[in-house]
Length: 169
Image (cartoon, rainbow, N blue to C red):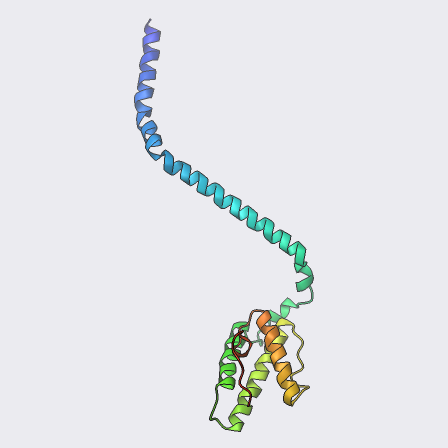
C-alpha cells in the first residue's frame, strides 16, 4: 500500500500544480480561440491573394507586357526620377492651363518645358510620342493623346483628369 499512497500523493501534487494552468486556459479560452481563428483567417487571405495574383498574371500575360521594357533605363544616373517628372508635369500643366494674363513668350516657354517633360516621361515608360514632329493643332492632339497614355500608366496630370475641361485659347 505504500506504493499506492505514493502514487496517489504524486497525482494529487500534479493536480494541484496544474490547477492554475487549467484555470488560465478556462478564463483565456476565448482569446486563445480568437488568436487561432485570426491567424487562420490571415493565412487564408494571404493564400487567396497569392492565387488571385497568379491567376491575373496568367490571364493578362504580365511577362509579355514587361518583356519590351528595358529596366536598365531606370538605373541610369543621368535620368530624372519618374516621381520628379510627374511633379514637374503637374506643376507645368497647371501653369499651362491657368496662366491667364501672362505673355505669349511665357506661355511658349511653359509649353516647351511641358513637352520636354512629356517626352522624358514617355521615354522612361516606353511610350511612343511624336511631339517634336508635329505643330499646331496636330501637336495639341498628340499632347492630349500622350497625356492620356501617361495617365493610363499611372501619372495623374491636370489636363488628363476626368471631369476637368481644358480651356482653349
